[in-house]
Amino acid sequence: MKSLLLAGAMIVATGTCAFAQGGYWVVGNRATSKCEIVTSNPVVNAQVGGNIWFGTGPYQSLDDAKLARSTIPSCPAVEEQPADTQDDEKKSN
Image (cartoon, rainbow, N blue to C red; front, side, top):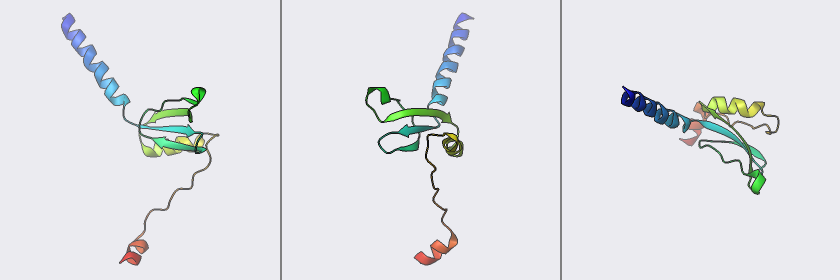
């Protein structure tokens, strides 16, 4: 019985680690003076001379990360590129 409980606990622990790796993070980059969205867990290293000075997340989707970035006061506003339209496709033909 103890071995089944131990095996179950190990499965839960490895499953939790696997889920923690996915997602999006919002990071503040001092070198570019921008807030960026990245897909790996950032290492905040500003205290030792690095460029990443904050990181928030993980967020489940890119839209969630964009929303979070827009609510952080130290992040400058980002202009989103417009989606391609049918007119653009007609011009290229």
